[in-house]
Amino acid sequence: MQPLYYRIAEDVINQIKGGQIKPGDLLPSESQLCAEYSTSKMTVRQGLALLARGGYLRSVPGKGNFVEYPRYDLLTMHFDEMDITSGYPQGVKLLEATIMDPDPQVRDELSLPKKAKVIMMKRLLYSETQVAALDIKFMPYIKGKPLIEKEIQYIPFAKMVAKHGELFSVKNEVTIYAAAADQEVASKLEISPGSPLLVIEQKLLSAEQKPMGWGKTFCRSDCLQLHAVSAQYIQDQKLLNL
Amino acid sequence: MQPLYYRIAEDVINQIKGGQIKPGDLLPSESQLCAEYSTSKMTVRQGLALLARGGYLRSVPGKGNFVEYPRYDLLTMHFDEMDITSGYPQGVKLLEATIMDPDPQVRDELSLPKKAKVIMMKRLLYSETQVAALDIKFMPYIKGKPLIEKEIQYIPFAKMVAKHGELFSVKNEVTIYAAAADQEVASKLEISPGSPLLVIEQKLLSAEQKPMGWGKTFCRSDCLQLHAVSAQYIQDQKLLNL
DNA sequence: TAGTGGTCTAGACCACCTG
DNA sequence: AGGTGGTCTAGACCACTAA
Image (tube, rainbow over all chains, first blue to last red):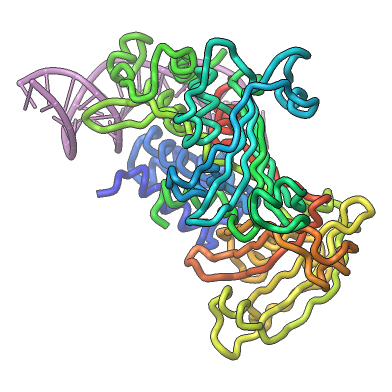
C-alpha cells in the first residue's frame, strides 16, 4: 500500500502530464488539498515536497504552489576515470609518479605559492586490451603524507585527493572539450598526431574552495562517450514510478 | 532567524565535515535528536530529509540513519544548443527545414515504421560573429502540425519537440564524444577537414519512452566547452549555506 | 482582513530489525 | 520486547500577499 502523500504527488503529476494543469497554473491551496484527501497539512506538504524536489512546483509564500516547466537543460552524468577500464585493475598502467616543481599553469590551477611542489602522476588507462586514455594529474605535495603506489594506481582521482588531504568530501569541477592529439599523447595512445581527443579536465576543491587536485584525461575518441540525461527524469524514477 | 530543522541539518553536516561522524556511522536516533534539540519528531525528520536529499544520509528502517560517502562521480551539467549563441537570435542561421524520408540511422533512432517521414532541420549557430556549430535535427513528421519557421529557428530542440508533440515534459538523453570533421561539416564550420569536433547527440523521449526527436550538434572545439560539477555540491548551495 | 505557504508540536500507529 | 525509522493527525502560530 502506497503512502497517502505519495498518492497525492502522483495525482498532481498525472494532472500535470495529462494537461489538466499547465505550467504557470496555481495548484489548489494546501488546505483545499487537505479537504480533498481528508488529511492533514503535513501529509499534503510531504506530497508537494516530492514534486518541488523534482522541479514540477514552485512554492510562493502568501500566493500558492505554481506548476513549473520541467528543465530539459539540466543534465546529470556519471563520470569516473576508472569507468574507462570497466573496473579491471589490470587496465591501469602507472607511467610516472613523482614530486616536482609545477609549471605555471599547474601552479595557477592549484593556487600554489611560488616554491610549492606538487605530486604528478601519469597513467595509461586500457579498456579491454586497447589503450584508451592518458591521464595526467597533479596535487599539492603535503610533507609527511606519502602516497602508496599500489593505492594510487587503481583509485579514482577524487578518492585519492580525499584520502591525501584527509577530506570527507570534495567538490568536483569538470570541463569537457575536444582537441587534437599532440605528439606525446598520440604516441602514448597509439594514434596519429592530430586525431580527435575527448579531453576531460578535472579540478577538485575542498569545502573551503581550496584547490586540492587538477588534471586532464585525454581519451581516444573511439573509446569513450559520455552519457547524460535530464535530471528531471532521474528524479522521476527515484521518486515516482512514472 | 533560521528555522530549527535547518540548524539541525547544519549541525549534523558540520559534524560530518569536521570528522566527528564518519561515513558508515550511525547518527543519534531521531528520538535522541528530539530530546537534544527539545523538539518534535517531524522537525528532526525535516532536517534529516535535507541531508538525505544531498546524499549525506541513508535511512534504514528499523536500524537508523547512516552517514554516506558523498558521490564525486555524479555530475550535473547545463546544456542547451542555444547557449552557444549566448542567447542572440541573430546567432542562428537556418540552412534547411524540410520534410523527407529518413535514412536508416534516423529511422532507427526514432523507431519509425518504414514509410514514415521526418522533419529535418539544419542550423548554423554563431557565437559572437564566428560560426561555432552545425546543428542537425530530426523529428517524426506529424500531419497537420506544421512548424512555424520563425519559431523553430530560435528555440532549443527540446522545446520545439515538446511544442510539436504537445508534450509537457520530455526526457533528454545526451551523448557526448569527439570526432574529426568530415568534408561537409568542415566547410560549414570554416575549419579544415579532420579538425577535432565536440559532437553532442541528443535524443528526446516522451514520458512513454517514445522517441520524439534526435539529432547532433557538431561544435568547433575552439568554441565550446562543457562544464559540470558534482551534484552533491549544487545541492549544498541550494540547501545549506556551506 | 482573509487566504496562503512555512514552521512546529505532541502525540499516535505501523513495519522493521535486533536481542 | 524494545528500539528504529515511516506515516499521519489535528491542531497552532508566523510571515507574506492580496484586496
